Image 1 (cartoon, rainbow, N blue to C red):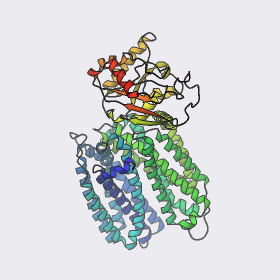
Image 2: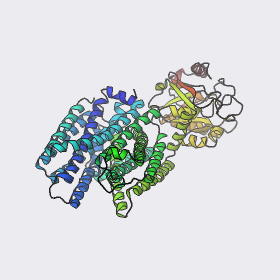
Image 3: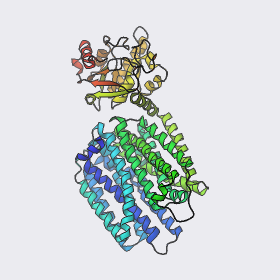
Length: 623
């Protein structure tokens, strides 16, 4: 069973997941029910009036994200989260009672006005929803937890659409009863969420919303990778809103198909998001793997372009249903593209959400997420304006999708240039998932936070890349400057913040700078890894350790964690066949290697001989 599904058996996640799923479902049940009510059940309403009201409804739901996101972030940081969620769910019950009354009165104006209150409730819930996960879950569960949340969100969108069509068939009053019942169920589920400590209990709430808007955006910008991840998430919602908004007319006018085909494609997209989210968890190996983001971006571009070249043949008669639609060869290709867009979206979005949660200051995490929600809303509005402008200019929906795919390629390339860590992690991920199969033993002994010194044997030119791809936290590697300067690998090492070092006889100034940078990194709470042999082995055996390790912990005592790589000797990047990289794939693809972590050693218990013996013991007979 995947870790994400196993989380549903735990009290620390299951009640929260059900609560957020029911909340997202209720939002879509109400909004879709309102759209159907206005379009089909309000007597005497023209098409222009209907379009105007539907667009007004969408705007009123998003407006609170602009107005109240700063307040929502402050509340989620200051107060205990389970209590805050329960109060927000009580607010949802009150809002849905008003909504039920509006359905009973059959008042379009009142129904639309209530959307503003629904948007306010969603605005308050968003920062609590995502800032809760890093507290409730262990670091190795964070990707799986986000995968479940993203799957639940898009599943709720789909189920809300289907349920609204079915329930409103019994009358608008039935829909009113349904939204209240779902809100009550959500509150009951929230009562099972365990208490979680507030991030900043001493925070003073400010109601100066313009100033606090600036403050939360400033908080989000404190960490470069977090800010650009937020921009990547917002761009995903730009894409998602455009596709989901244009999908009904795309089905109707490009393929001559009915609303059941629209629901089918929406279901495929939602299932694709879920599959992509779970695939991301599988491929990431329980770490926040940013290397998957470029793969997701590539898929969003490739399959978005393919949709443009896959034209339908709408008939002049009645709209066709799912059976006739699927009988067309071009339709199967559309279904494939829609599923792959969803899968690519899941692979793209899950690591970005997890990174924002993981790297944000815990005291400001909810406010950073509030900034994310605010920027998401900006991009959603921009998506609507983009579509309106493009369609008014005569652009067809397939051409709109083509432009969107090309824009995605440009935006992704720009972001990856600004934050090369994404491409660096992609190269690392490709290395350890194409050339090697890595078994990981004892890596939970590496602390999730705080400084530590990792000490490992040195077998090949890619030892650092293997460690970087397996350990959950970023690592600052100390490496011989000639390896640091190797073509292609140098980009990876520089991007990862590796520290080049030279021998005292080669460049004493570089050596001193290296020890100063190591000291600074440890004092900043980072992980530092050193290969104390000082060189790559020539014969597969462990070379004697040099005294750099003891010098590091004498300057700043930190826990020392011994590591051992097994099985890299004889591979392409080792010196088993003379010069490294001289014999292409001598052991074939997917050769099995191991990374083993030993028990952490206190700094005052470390001796050079003892540490060398411990690494030798961890390595064992397998070189």
